[in-house]
Length: 374
Ligand code: NZQ
Ligand code: ZN
Image (cartoon, rainbow, N blue to C red; front, top):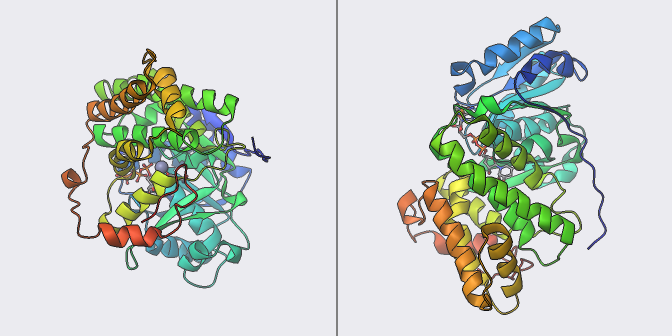
């Protein structure tokens, strides 16, 4: 296990009705909040009203940035930064999934930068200050509610890149699983696949760490148990609650502690999203089983056997190769059962830009679990 620093400064308010605490929590960090949200789901399902009534009760003034895209664009970040300066915002309050939260994280830094926010994405050393962030999570997927990273897209240059700073870790997050009842089957499936992918990126990395690896298996088993349940019954509170908490733990730094995670599949998916604007979790679910087939070898075999036996309950039976392949097949079958297409073709991607995307990745995956060339 490598050396590591473990710190998660985010306060979590988890469970039904926690939104009532929002005003009191927000007030600790600011008095003029910018609410950042997407295409309007929070207005249709009542979350916006619940949030703003709590803010009003605590005397927190609020302004709005709406229309943040899934795969949030840098143009939205620039719009948000402008609003921060105009209204002297002192707190970012994203309400939504990873896209709204990530956009708010970038805005929190861009508010202090006199230029295009894309500069900060390309060069983190330009980040001088970050406004505090409090989130209200409405979709279990990215873990952005409890990590210091955001992912921003620039469709002019076909780039999707992460931005990060320790101060981008939310100060607090409100996590009410019942807020995810209205997430449709497509995004529930994609979110589950994203959580599983974060866990698998940690699991299939060069270093082992016994405790972290067993915890990772637990996160994966939680998704296997509850992802399908949430699809079958969107109002299943236990399913939504377990997915939501698994989402935070998959990427909050606990599973990766001491491991040096190479994020190979995410690297590939970010290329697909940058050119085709596909749903992140769907891209991951398509790529992962193929990537697994490709990296399975004598040297990775034992890890794949652990995956098959400990996550999918497959009997080793003395034939390690058969067990490993059965584990990959079980994952593929599970994604299919969630209703996710299993080929790029089905999401409208042909081979026209494959070489370009592979070249863009260049040598960035050369330190992967298994080193990859274009
Ligand atoms: O925009 P609205 O109207 O809110 O609708 C959204 C959006 O259409 C909808 N939705 C969210 N909550 C809902 C709801 N619909 C009904 N009821 C609710 N309660 O779901 C759609 C997708 O939302 P989005 O925020 O885009 O999804 P997700 O949370 O999966 O975020 C995806 C983005 O996060 C990035 C991805 O690359 C992608 O850009 N990631 C962020 C990470 C991080 N910060 O650490 C790590 C991840 O690996 C990932 O890269
Ligand atoms: Zn992800």
